[in-house]
Image (tube, rainbow, N blue to C red; front, side):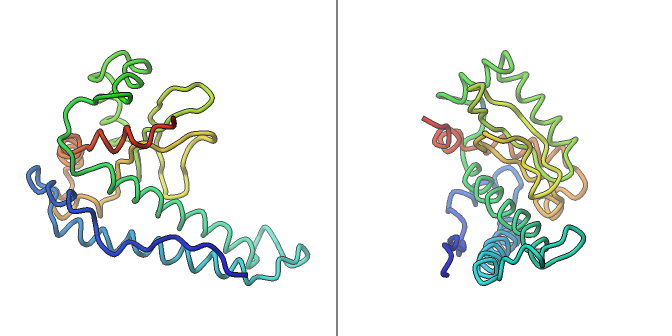
Length: 201
């Protein structure tokens, strides 16, 4: 069986490099692209191995088995691919306050953009890996979440709208250990049109 494969990114959107105006450098993005490619390649590799695997229930085991290893690492690889796809699509904009439908959703959930921005920054500081803004299809509202790893997207029946990578590889070259400065810089380059484009219609 030939599985469906994800598209391996060969380059970043040109708009990404406009983040140099706030201190997020081309060198950081170019190194980060390599990680995104790695998640795509491993996603494809695991999909192929799962397609070729003899899915014999008597060989599967919760302590260790090929099925367990492939399935758990698939969640990590594909999660990393999706998280970075949203991350790179979400920056390179003008930043500032949200506009359009996402502005209304943020204000409905948080009362004001300022209160959401404070929550977002605090979420980014509290996270080990990611801060997420997601749309809850059940409640038709947005909520911020922490993702401590690539495969810890926090809630079912949500659509990921905005992702803030707070692993050190996303900022250390430019900001060293000053994560708050990186998060503030990120806020200045959010592409709200891209975020609006991911809201379910």
